Amino acid sequence: MNDSNLEELLSTVAVLRDQVNNLNARLAERERLTPVEEDRKVSPVLNVYSIVSKPDKFDGTRKATHVKTFTGKMRDFIRCQTNLPPEDHVKVAASYLTKSAYVWFSKWAKQNPYAELEAFLTALELHFLPSNSAQEARDRLNALKQRSSVKEYVEKFLEILEEIDDAQDSELKTLFLRGLKKEVQIQARLADRGGFLSFDELQEVALDVDSILFQNGHFKPRNFGNGAAPMDLSNLDLEDQERYRREGR
Image 1 (cartoon, rainbow, N blue to C red):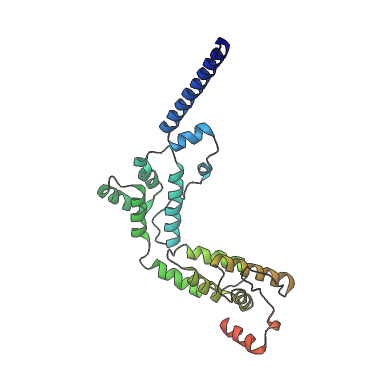
Image 2: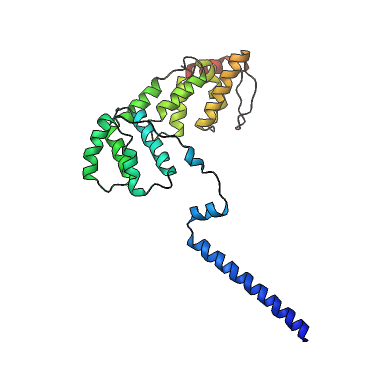
């Protein structure tokens, strides 16, 4: 090997050595950074959680919707405060309590001085939620009827549903169908003859049927993903018509 080739080889080795050293330095820094710090350094982006609105004050009203809404929004709000030390989570959450809720917290905090946020929110729910709130909510869903549009019925149904944590899709579908107007209910039952629709899909069916009824006064065939589609009752024989009318009571 002549001197020229040797010099060129040594130069290439030196460049490669510098690249390896730089790579090792970058890897070492990445291991030192937390995932959040690394994301901010590599790709600064808008933290979408920073736009979560502050929860409303909670005054101790023993109504399931008020309690659940407060604890749910507070979890989201605190989760987004990335610069807030965990030991301050309960203090910040408690600053949104008023009246009887704050009186309760003052006593509870003395007995639980080092509690974490989840323990605090769980204790708050246990204290302020009515003991039979889930059953009362089910009773209200069972009695709920569509009085105007399906859209308003869905909104009211989902509002009450927030008070129930353990409802299954099959139960929700039964309760939801029971409250629909007969005309909408029959078509929704037909669309779910195989029982394959989810509760969310059943809502969409009812909304579509209601829209078609309002706009045209009759039903248009439509595929809802399970091979069944709403049909006009005139497409059924008299026995089936009577059967679906009975089921729609």
